[in-house]
Amino acid sequence: MTTVVRVQVPDLNLNDDTLDDRLAEFDNATFSEVDGLTLITVYVEDGWSVVDTVLEATRKLATKIPAAIAKRVHPDLVTTSDIAQRVGVSREAVRKWVKDSRKPFPAQFDNITAGHQRVWRWAEVAEWLLKAKSIDMDEDLPSLADIAHIDACLNKVPDMLSQAWAMTQTEEIAFSFAATGRRASISPVIDIELYRQQRVCRGEEVSSAV
Image 1 (cartoon, one colour):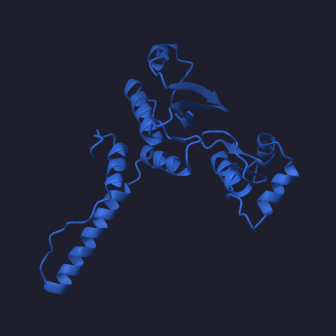
Image 2: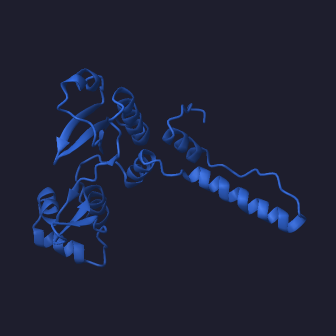
Image 3: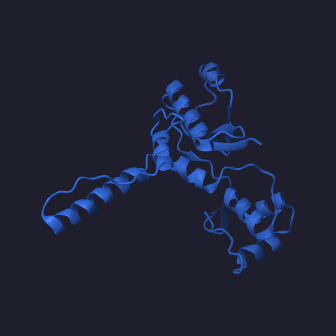
């Protein structure tokens, strides 16, 4: 099954006819406008890495059109009415789900219309429906972990590997000075999969052997 990931690219002007040829070069992505937002929709074939494929597409887009910088995965926000319509239940049923403390509903994403309308991320709601209600929406959505990873890469959040390395160095140096007064050699244990993911995040080539 193909996983579909939509990413916001606010400065991409789809009305610019001079970009048509460059956008046509994407064989696993399409472009559209939804509620005033320009989106690149990336289709990830079964067995492919969702994070790798989406980041490769957004980097390719920025290379071809420098102003087209991807910002975040489109959250696909839904109200209680939207949820009811997609699931095929009443709005009252959804309101009961939201209030049921025995099976905590996902935290709301935001309030709209002057705070009177609550909205949720559809990906989180769909995951909750499967786990809490055994309702499979039959949509191959990206996992919440993949969404967080893609957003962190697009926004250049300092990677966990660098933070862990710096923390290990600081702790070992402090321990060495306290125990012997001499600086220790640093040899922290590195999580190979985390290392691979962070290199992908930075746009570096990663061989299958890493």
